[in-house]
Amino acid sequence: MSIAAFIPVKANSERVPGKNFRLLNGKKLYRYLCENAAAAGCFDEIYVDTNSDEIKDYARENGFKVIDRKPELALNTANGNDVLVHQFELFPDYDYYVQLFV
Image 1 (cartoon, rainbow, N blue to C red):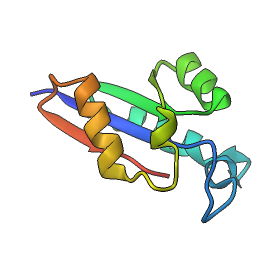
Image 2 (image 1 turned 120 degrees about the vertical axis):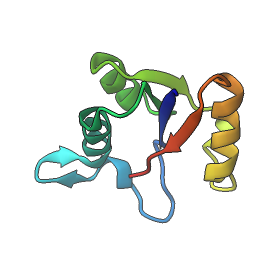
Image 3 (image 1 turned 90 degrees about the horizontal axis):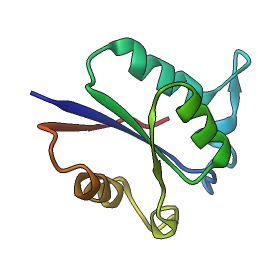
Image 4 (image 1 turned 180 degrees about the vertical axis):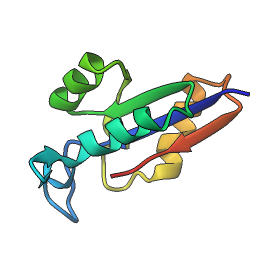
């Protein structure tokens, strides 16, 4: 049984501007999510799906796989289902797909 985690993290957020980059106890929110996903130890692979260069750099430096967010999936009209379908199309061989959001 193989399990993949996908962490969609947009560079922009209209409802809560800068949400993923906000600090909590001196650490950016997206980092909490990535670190906790890795610490859980239950995923065969963890992918960070983003259009942010900062987040891509962080993900690569910390051993996560990176998916370059398609521009149309970074729009506010896209939803988590659209993103999950795209992730499945890229990586169709997992038994389970988990999305983790900030």
